[in-house]
Every structure is written in structure tokens, then in C-alpha cells.
Length: 167
Figure (cartoon, rainbow, N blue to C red):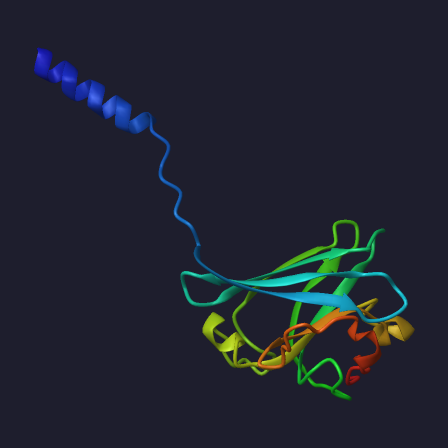
């Protein structure tokens, strides 16, 4: 009887334990500064976190946004100064009330898969726009170069921002 009691106790003990959390991330991460791109005092960071499947979760955290608006986020080919830079991908918009955005980044606008390891070689930039239509479409709240376009120590790049290509 003592053996059965021990086995039952072990089964109950195992059933009551919390399952071990399995992370969806590898621990590899790249972060870039986003600087103000207009008269709005908005800045922050963009982080690319490698997932175990090789793709990325992109997190944006901005300071200086508020209200109920959503701000479109584009990955553009070239640097922040490239005139008429093509949109390489759309990311989830920044929610103004929180200043946050999160996107599962798996492909570019042309359906080309984009793995975490590919981002370092991508000559691109991020631009957070005031709105997706009207005059606000050409207002860049914040942005910065990423991947191969990133230059260590870029600061205050406001004067270097160009208007994006209109569709």
C-alpha cells in the first residue's frame, strides 16, 4: 500500500507543477534609435527580436505621442535621406496613447521572406508618419536607419529626412 501511495503522491505533485515556459525568442536582439523627424518632439527605439523560427518580432517604443491616433510605420529602402524611398514593408501602426507597436516581421511588401539574420544587411530605414493620408502622410514623427544603412552615432537627423514616395 505504501508503494501505491508514493506513486499517487508523485503523480499529484507532477500534475500540480507549472509547466516550464518555452520562449518564442532566441535572445538575439538588435535595437536602433528613432529620432525626431519634424517639429514634433517624438523619439524612441525600434527593436528586432529573433524568434526561434528565424523571423523577427519588431517592437517600437516612442516618447512624445498621445491621444487616440494611430501612426503608420514603414520600412523604406535606402536611408532616411533617400528621396522617394520605396516602401519595403508596412509594420503595425504605433498607438499614440501608448507610443507602442509590435509586428511579426516575416516578409517584405513584395512577399520576399525576411529573416532576422537578413536585417543586418538590409539597407533600410524606419519612418513613423503622423497619418496615412492627407498632409499628415508627409510628416515624419520619428525615424532612423537600420541594418546596412545604420551609422553609429547618428543624432538629431531631422534635417536629413526626406519625404516618402507616394503611392
